[in-house]
Length: 124
Figure (cartoon, rainbow, N blue to C red):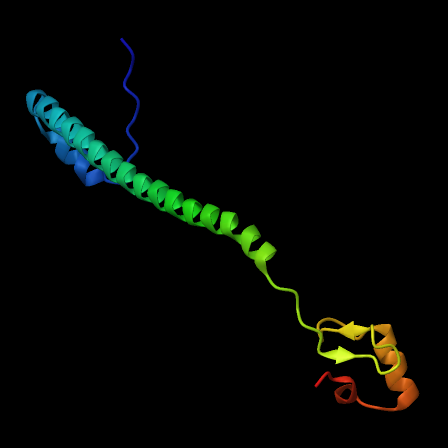
């Protein structure tokens, strides 16, 4: 028969009390502890499953909202109206600028040549 290994524990008082019990009481206590451990383990597993289901449900809802937004986004981009021109060249009436982005070359050149400010090119 194998020699039992030495028990190393952080709770020496519990081990002393356990050793003080008779063999039948020790067996009964071990059975109760095993049942308590199994019940505790099942409760913890149930709790974690519930939490996992909540996370999965929240993820499904958020992905469905994201998918809806992605599906609606390209249509909104296609329906967007072109910006109206706000500035026009005084030399060439065919050149327009909507006022978005950097100044076009024709506008910079005309502003330098005429010495006028941006408001002078504004369409009224």
